[in-house]
Image 1 (cartoon, rainbow, N blue to C red):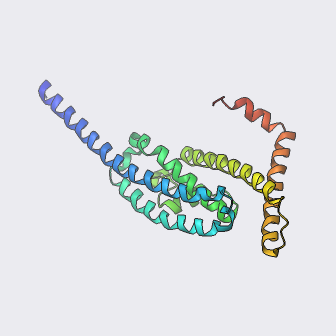
Image 2: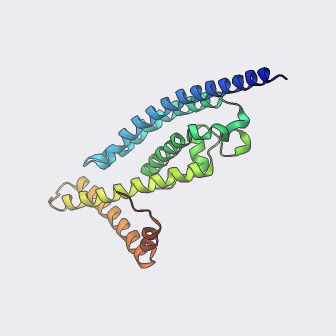
Image 3: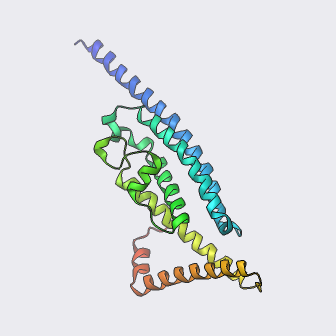
Length: 213
């Protein structure tokens, strides 16, 4: 092969890779926009009346997950099946966001932590690397860590809501029961914080947490 032919071949490879990346980017952008819309929907739980409409918000979010499956199925076709990690960086953060959204919905519905296998079922991808487009374990864990931060924020907001409700003299039995549920959730949060403090986990977490503004 001549030098000229070699450079022609290299240019063809570069062009093909560029085309693949552009096609991947289009799908990822669509997924990111869809994820943002669901996030805005779920953010309503942080508002004063958010706890009264959780089931409806989760149902609407679930309806969007079908579109996620369609887009992820399209993403699989944009690159060679054996080159997942070659292009992984293009969808890694987006996939972590989808894991978080799936985990958040499941937690709001059941107060349980979603498994990696359950997330892959929701998103229509694989858990096993050998079976193709899959959910990398690190992407799953990153999404779960985002959930932890979100639940921490929700716990703080719940305490603020609790303080506000204490100012009310609730006569309505239904409201009283729901308020008792809020008090129970706050109590559980306080118990976790207390237990973490006793075991020294808070200090250890603070020591390993990088300082940021």
